[in-house]
Image 1 (cartoon, rainbow, N blue to C red):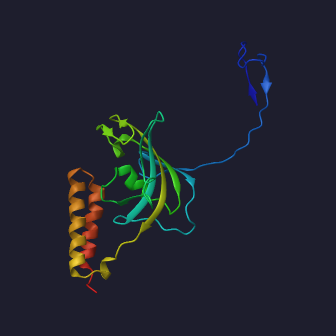
Image 2 (tube, helix red, strand yellow):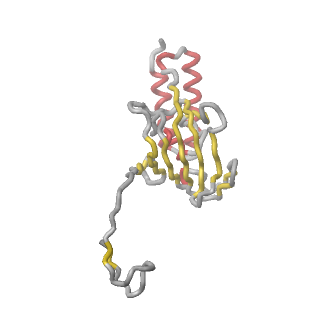
Image 3 (cartoon, helix red, strand yellow):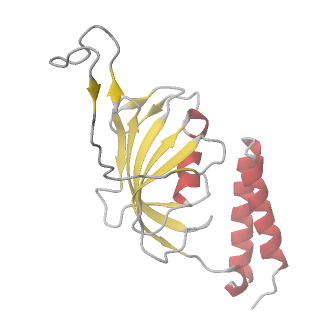
Length: 203
């Protein structure tokens, strides 16, 4: 029940001091997930992915469709809609903003999610020129992402020596780049993978 104690009309046609009874129906309930662990990247699942689908790991090629908006609704970027299979990038290789890297790693194939990314995990203090509009510095970003597909790469123990060395070098360079930008936790994960790969016996 809602009781209006104000002597004025709160809603046209409703006398003051009227007790109202309102019937509400919950149409849907969407759970918001803190995927970054610090409330800087939030994910709301709009459509669940394939049942039993795994999640992509760093180093895998992923294909997505994405629409990026500002908080006022301005669309600044759309990608993956004009090419077959969606927009492709390698997860965890700093090819997209950190917020997208983190969130996409939690998505199943076929999943559609709405992301809210704070500036610290977006473009920060930098201005960004999107395909459709400019993102001002210190902007919170809203992305609608559809996970189209991802492909698991070769496991280290299946690689020959040359492939193993190339993979290790790529991981090391990525780790160095992350370290230079003070993303120490993500850099440590890359260096750990370097050690794990180097210590595995060749096939």
